[in-house]
Length: 197
Image 1 (cartoon, rainbow, N blue to C red):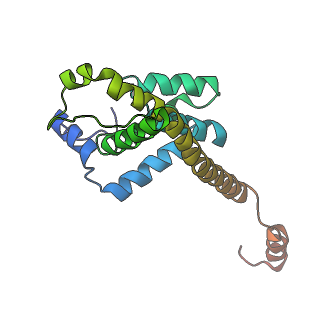
Image 2 (image 1 turned 60 degrees about the vertical axis):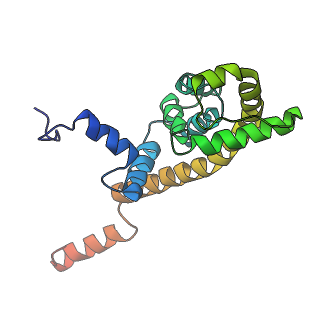
């Protein structure tokens, strides 16, 4: 018997809606998300580096294998694999349009192309297949430096925040386990005077 199981399990549509718009609100969902990250097992470096790997691969055009790429990069630099999977959440339906525009423009500048691509009203798979080189190559070339930049941008704040959380938690636990200075003398004085502690 599970104590914390919901009385009425969520339906698939409710779970999907929670991904798009959390019922608890974005702020509380973000806080919960952050606590899930900082409480992971591992060093602040491994967690932050794994998270940064997931963020970085979100800027590559390899949709569908971001989890795998993030895990490979995290394994190479000895980072947390679960954190790398969580980091791929940086690439989502809300952020992908902005990511693709940024990465495509950076790729076009690096390649020295004019960047003039006749875009249809609706982008289809057929359009992408017909213009594979014109779309995919700039996304790939632009995704590498932009992804590397976002690795750094996400790693250092995450490392600082996780390290600070771990440090504060250690000091809080040490304060609980060790009596404060002077507590022994006060307890001895109370015993000798017959006072209640």
